[in-house]
Figure 1 (cartoon, rainbow, N blue to C red):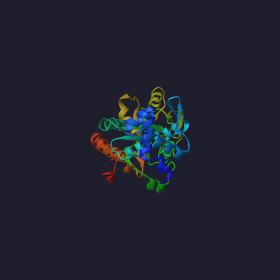
Figure 2 (figure 1 turned 60 degrees about the horizontal axis):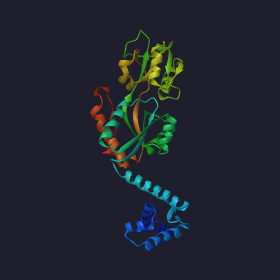
Figure 3 (figure 1 turned 90 degrees about the vertical axis):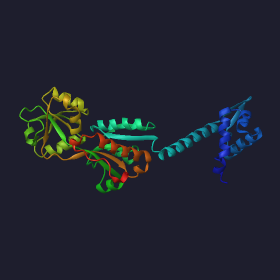
Figure 4 (figure 1 turned 135 degrees about the vertical axis):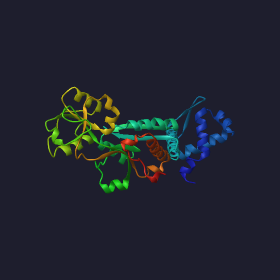
Amino acid sequence: MSKSDTILSAKSLRYFLQLIETMNYTQAAQILGITQPALTQQVKKLERAIGAPLFGQMGKKLYLTEAGAAAIELLNTINGVISDIQEYTQSDKGNISIGILESVHVDLFYQFLRYFNKKYPEVTFTVDYFDRKELWHRLDSNMIDMAIMYMPDTTNKTGANFRHQYNHRDICPEHIVVLTHKDNVEAGGTYSVTRFGNRKWVAYPENYYLSRLMRLNFSKKIDLVTPFKIASTKEMIKIAENTDLDTYVDQTYYEAHKDEINLTPVYIKNMPEFTTACVYRRGKLDVPRMKKLLTELQIFLDNNLDRNHNFSKLLSEEIK
């Protein structure tokens, strides 16, 4: 028998844990149904294998030595690992970590999380917002289970690497909606960028996805002059409404808040198409709770999305 087998034998560990609980050899032996010498022998066996005493004695009272305290910490770590492994195999328990790209608006997704939590209350969620670089870092490092982001996105991925490492499924198609003060355009109309040549803008910071799309489209014809760059969509619109500046948001945000917005919504010709998508590492579908989450999300979207909004399905047949 190896030294590690001796240290971690089920009997020795059970006796050790019981003695920790009572800190009394007589009581621990009675609970275990053995004699006190037999208990003492097992503890001494552990101490010889470890090479240090686990308990000291002051008068009649036992106390844990530094080695004993370290052993407890090790056992807690082992128990934590066992718990994580057990959660990995369960579909209705455990934590799912989700990262969301800044400026993506996913009200419907939060509705789904509330629905899922009622159905599976022992599955918990950690949700946070990141810029594109940090979001990809966390996906690559397996620090998050899935991401909600705009696609296509090649921040740090070649097409080949993306296909080999990740799955992504579109949640909904998106468009940029320009919110303007211009009085010679019609709500919902589509116009050339040259119609906005003399306009100034309040916009997202330059590293934001929508700002990049706007710059790519406008730079071919006119300069995109942006006196204000703000990360908050709500504040961006508020500033636009209280100045003569125009702004822009994605279609999902506009549809959710159009009754609150006092600017004219229009579209720009030849603006690149993009989608809001769910991105996750290949292999995540091997985790039962992730497969259940994605399957339930597909069902939820099928039942709740506005058919007229032409949303695409989230998942393919691979998770069925």
